[in-house]
Image (cartoon, rainbow, N blue to C red):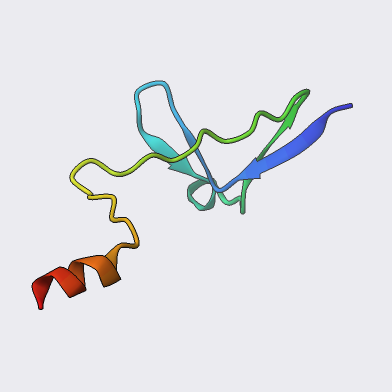
Length: 62
């Protein structure tokens, strides 16, 4: 069984993104045999992961 996937842009081999609206389309559609799950998103570089210990840190300030 195959599945259709539609995206608003494609990335060309030179790294440039070609948007569907640039060529008069609303989306680029592809037929794929297997849909792979998306990679889990990690923290963005420079972004701190904060725990929900706000109550504990507030009590130590008083």
